[in-house]
Image (cartoon, rainbow, N blue to C red; front, side, top):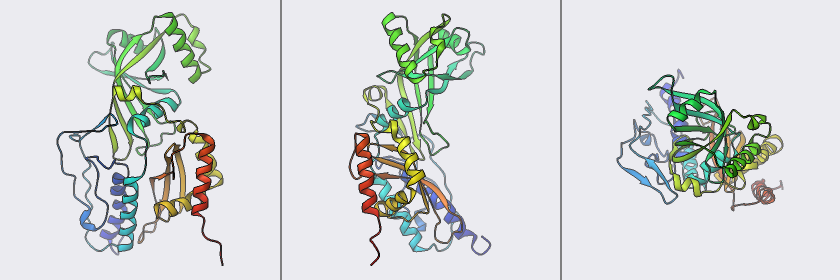
Length: 346
């Protein structure tokens, strides 16, 4: 730092800018240009007007606040490091990912079944109230709840049914992980057939929920009217209610965590080799965070040239072909591992 503080500042800020580029859809108004030279590090992002409507049923709100990132860089940066960052940004821009409606439905479906319900407070008019509640999604993605009549959130929704539910991904650890906010209205379920369906759904997600048979507990269901999704750094947008309800959860994401744990515990060197072969970047470690039908989210660590500490960030490692069954996931990973293996020594 003392020898060249400007150079070191750039080396630490550049990966932040890179993350913004990596997780933005190619058509997004938030997309940063690839890092190709020091001049591409801007002092801020230009504002844009309007919204972008995508065929997948989601909009990117371009009037929302953007990041004001100042590099403070003055001086030369190793051209090899710039080339690595540009190559990585270009690969990630085209990497296959789940579309927003599928990603949201998958997150809600495979999450552990607890989320934050926000209501308009009955006891403190004009203020919001938040409660951690259990839920289970029905086939249309509508959250189903069972509430005690004594709970404050039950009293809130009986007065004002407008609510929102904030659901974080099952392994949520920070800003790079997915979360979704469902907005809608709460209604009490009274039909006998629907009550049995709600009970069955809830017990599938919460098999130990003995209180489903208590007489002072009532069933509620949330009708979703708006969906706001954050999939990580600079990957955010809104999904229409119709796109959300008509989407299906990804067939692989539900058991992707078990695959990730196995690879991380027994075959990390294979993941490191795959990142080098398919992404074109040398990394020191590679931990798979999620697996779906199109590929894997991988947290990698690498030390930029000229720096003395490794930096962690998430990248997308697509499969060479889409998969729909558990056995085929193993097959495609084995194929990619073999393709990534170094040639035998002469």
